[in-house]
Image (tube, rainbow, N blue to C red; front, side, top):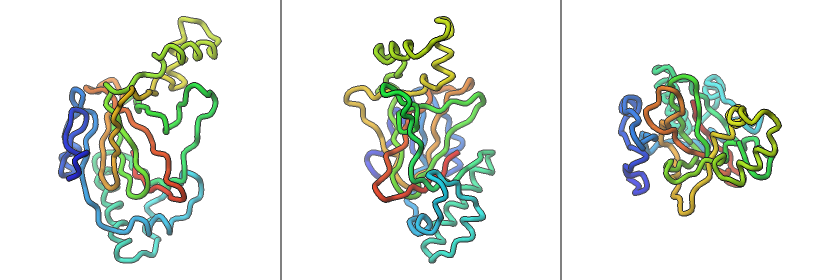
Amino acid sequence: MDSEFSDNTQHKLVTSFDELIHTQFQGAMNAICWHRNLIGDFKEIVTKLPLKENVTVVSVEELLALSLSPAGDMAREIILNDFNLLKDVGASPVLNLLKNYERDEEFDFISTDVYSYHVDRSPIATDTFLCTYYGASSDILPNSEVEQLILIPEIRQKLQEVYDGPTAEFDTFLTEYFFDLHYQPKPHAHPLNLGVGHLWKLAVDHPEQQALPCVHRAPIENEGEYRLLLIC
C-alpha cells in the first residue's frame, strides 16, 4: 500500500464498502478511504463518452449504451457497482465527465470556486462521497494546516469594502455568498492527493457532525485529459 495512504490523524483506510459506510468520523479524522486497485480500462470509457458541456453528467443509460472492449466493460461494471452500493444506502451518485469547472473571477483577492480549498456544507446530516476513475484527482488538507480566508485581515478588509449593508449583518453576507467555506493553506502545509480508483467519504459541515468538515479542492486538470468522477 502506498505510504501516503497510511492511516493518520486526518484520514483512515478501510477495506470494504460496508466498513466505509459504518466507520464514523471523530476528532481530527474527517476523511475515510476505501483503498482499491481497480482493474479495467477507464480511459476507453472517457474516450467514447461525448463531452456535451465542460461538466457533462453521464447517465447510467449512456454508460450501458457504450460498445466496449472486455477491459472497458470491466471498468463499466465497477462504476455501475459503485452506483448501486451508494444508492442502496440512500446516496444519489452522479457520474461526471469533466473538462473543467467554472472559474470564479469576480474578485482578484478571493475565490469561491472548487479549485479553492473549501468545505462542503449541508443543512441535513450527510457525507460527501467521491471517486476519480480517470484523470487528475482532488487534494485534502488537515484543518490544522489551513486558515479560513475570511479571518485573514487583508481579505476581510477587502470584503468589508465590497459589502454595503448593515455592519451587524456582515457575517450573514459572508455565509450567503460562501466566502466562509474557503481556506488558504498555511506555510509548509502537506496536502494529500486522493488518487485514482479509491472511494472516499469526506465529512460535511452540518448540525449533527461530530468532526470538523474536510477541507478539499478540485485539481487543475491535466493538459488534454478529461476526468471521470463519481460524486455525491
